[in-house]
Image (cartoon, rainbow, N blue to C red):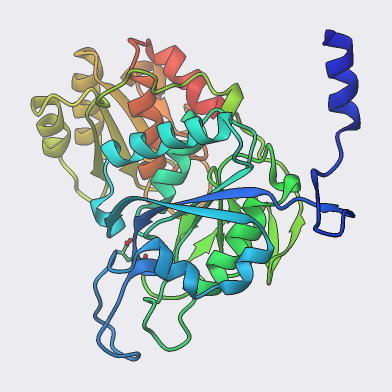
Length: 355
Ligand SMILES: NC(=O)CC[C@H](N)C(=O)O
């Protein structure tokens, strides 16, 4: 086969087809793999109306039994990666997920769905966005009500997530999260409610699109680097560098920052007040940290808006890095991946402007 022939094939590639028993052609269903990790979507309680429940009780097969129509959207296979509440999600499980997604998307899988608890979905979504090397759809989904609740939200969320993972229009949009009709980008999503089914928002830039009973509408592509354009990789990586988050507040001293350095943190993210601000005492502690080669990123405890370089804090003087769009928990993920290599503050600042 000449290279030219392959280009022509790529340009004329239409939907895949398969022959039915009577010999006519019909579009072949996409192959979607569901990687289950636990969370409320797999949670169970003794009754339909009680607030208390246990995450990660239900297997992927039982979850799929609740959405029989999903079989019309895709050929679906399930794999259980873990079964934890996402408060117990770990870098180990995240790396296992990423490696498995890279393997599956290199072969015949057209899309991936990950069932996951919502508490730390921001972190897993953003991590995968940076280290998964595919343009195929990778979609996280969860629920706020356990599978046994009245009006459980898991089944429809799962149905919509499968519809997005099976949709070629979802390609090249980075890692996505589908819940409550909305399609979010890993870059922008934040969890905003401890209990409401409308817990995910994309306040800074807006939604990637919507999905209503599996009918998808896409509005935009992410504007930052991800996936195949990302410089980060976990090939051969066993552990990530220690990065701590220190929460900013009134009359803060530098004790927690000093403690993080003493505890061998390679990086510290400050959830600063306002535009990544902090007390003079905390800034002095930040300077002590950067002088020792510990990377210090200024993020914000405020829900929306960017943290810019040199706004009130003179970053050059303190050796600090501005997080721009990233909240503290996503900044920690980016910083941990960036610190897999030795980097100067200038390079880290570039990274926080590009990702
Ligand atoms: N709604 C949820 O998924 C949150 C519950 C649970 N703590 C989890 O993150 O797995």
